[in-house]
Length: 262
Image (cartoon, rainbow, N blue to C red):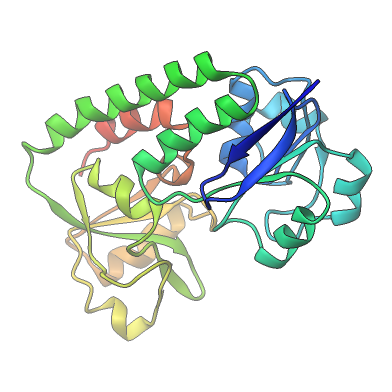
């Protein structure tokens, strides 16, 4: 088995046995990508949030949560590659793992970052052709809906990811970038995931309110609460995976955005 050097999206270089045979994925969207690239035997450890594909989730060893990794469980699996993400994983734990294993990190804020990650991961695991084809298909799908979006009036949206306290998806997030492909403009100019007080809610004045299915599991009952605040505003439950998963789930996201009606 040969040694190869790769550079991750943080600009770090790692050396791995190539192609890697024992892979741990620390991020749901990247776990789904690895399985969709055909790495059914190589992926031996995933987080408890890596729920897709469901059949693989059931039988693959769980190594904790994205921000609460079970380091001892990871050590026991003796991975020759760990794949994580700057935002979704906890820095101290990642730095600890980096001292013992090759850890490749993604850093994603927009569609281009996601496409680059898909191709880079394909290269990393010996699935170059499949990953390039996947990235091309995703890019083509998003180019098609972008043409349609440009012909529609832009609506301001409040995208809620949490309740008690209320939290929005703000700027400098992947969700913020995905909203644009639905013909939506983020109502907040605050960065990351700002907490919104009850009084601040009244000042948002959105045209559309989207309640994400994750990380907080908003349900139909929550629609009524928001409708009381904004009786004339469209309030909808949406599939949070389509807005926030930046791996192979993007193959489905463009079509999903196209079908949303506001």
